[in-house]
Image 1: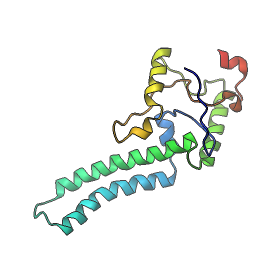
Image 2: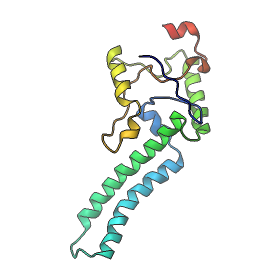
Image 3: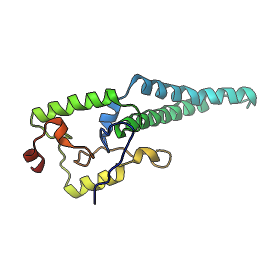
Image 4: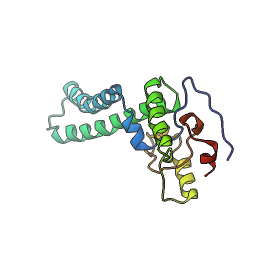
Length: 167
């Protein structure tokens, strides 16, 4: 599959970041988005009930609403963090964290994106399934849990030598 060049307003950090890495790079605004989503769903149910009273206890509805708000808020926060990895929104903080983290891994002689016990074809399939999946959370939430080498960035910027790249 040929490499595609994608131009973004900010530098591309990772085209398919690992799920744990996306969560680790959450900003406080992402946590605030998550909290707002968690609170907004049951609040909407409460105000809806005020406008048109159901005359039933809403305890179960509020609990379900809180859970759905929690999940929806997390997906929105995850998507916002992913946009920064893709370079779609301001990402200077993530760029600095990424450079420090992966440069340290390169200096220690470790693989930049971790190792995987999966065969190469499984890693490729995992990449093709999870790339851009954050845009499809409304239909089918999918996260990247597989370490692979398909990230769309030049490993030389982290101090990896050309010989190490071919190994």
